[in-house]
Image (cartoon, rainbow, N blue to C red; front, side, top):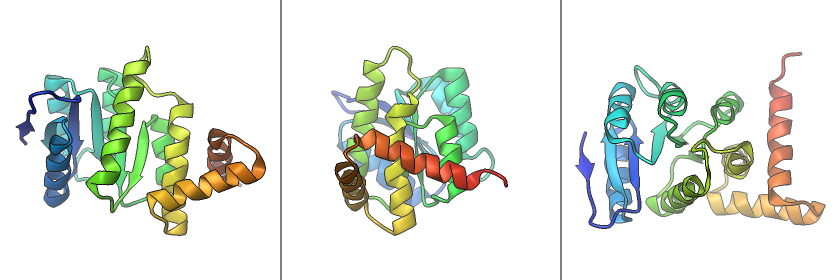
Length: 194
């Protein structure tokens, strides 16, 4: 665990991943982008650090030994009211449904480079500062969730998934958020027991 501090921080972020290389890469990249980074390689330490440092945002890997990202996210939401972003190599239907139910600000599918992560983190900080309550609304998470789903399902990168979503919106004469909602609704419909 370490903490990097920049003179003029864009905000304090907790980064949690059990892969030390990913953790070091994310921490360094976010610090270079101007964030104050606190990092942990497991869920127990993540909760302790979140209680101690009260970051404005958490970036959480999902699958870890001990407390997983879902456990940490539930604690951050219920006890500390800290928004979070999930970062995972998994985007199966069950994982995506769980991400949505926990109210993540965004869901990023690995592998990603720091250039793709920083704008999402900046947007999440901006979203948090505009909201009265620190918890994200369902509408704020639909587009990132739909993009992550398309990335996994169709093996697309983030730009391609966003372009596909935008094309559908243009073709159907709908707002991007409405197309995202339809995609997520269709996913949830497939998950319902018969």
